[in-house]
Length: 124
Image (cartoon, rainbow, N blue to C red; front, side, top):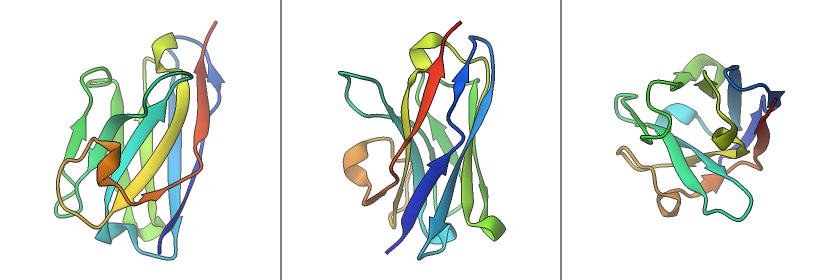
């Protein structure tokens, strides 16, 4: 069973950048489709980005297209989320998730394994 640990969340000004990391143990991430999700207070957990297991093809929510980039480093067993031009509405706890299923999956119900989350706050 894979365990996931996120890091990299911080307080950043609007227009700034952050890179989140998701490190796996207990399994190799190259066998999993990986998703990044976020949840703001009082809101549903929403899919932000996904990297498909078969070919690392990526998908993004419309709200982050052109600003966020998901990538994998299989040698480090780590997935990243590069976030640029951050906006106050990006403020949330960000989670990575994994599933042994192929596809561009942006709904939380698709995923079996979750990290504990990392807080991103965008504010001046």
